[in-house]
Length: 316
Image 1: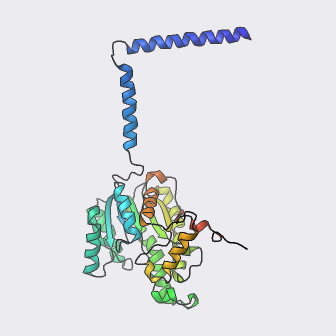
Image 2: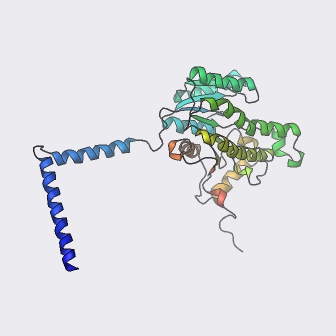
């Protein structure tokens, strides 16, 4: 046994010596050869560090639902631009004032596409697709669906008294539009493309004054899963973000939003309110190659509030 060990050690010593001679020969006549190798390694490391964590360069991202600088869609648009995406914007054609306001807000993002979109009008959905064809060369890599609406009376009244018209309106704009818009854009989406929509906790839990919108968001989350299944074989991912409560134009229609925000801040594990930037950064991740293995999911960006079963500090 000792002889075998000695023989093995001797063999290893011979190999090490041979390797050393070979390295010396290869480095001979090249002053600073070792320094050059180290320098090359350092350069490669530096180049890797220069690569952004979320890289959307070369991607064309179409974003819906920007109303003002408090919109979640606005936070997402900023994060996507920061990640290098080329930005396209849709706006709700209510009047010239709305268009000019959204145009002025998004100007720093240098959008190369700016089009009107009312999802209740099929011709405008087709117009969106036509714009992708003519202005973007038939390519869209990222689609962000931030569209939701419900009549105020159907939010604040008794849920059982939701009108049929209000029910249909809420589900049509807030959920069905995800299907119609993605269907129109799918011919221009290649493998690796991604779709993102926005949900809320009211899809799975009762939120006072949310009513029919909770039903619409539940339908939206289910639609996310079915679309992920349908588009998966084509390499297209579909996900949703469920953000914590934020003071936006849409949330202003929900009674008690200020109290809800304070409650979340006091209850969530991180003890902090959510910002549109946090949602935007999470969106950029989900829409990037970094999340290439994720589809059909609802990601909660709410400081952990969704996991809580009771508020902290409960005592007998």
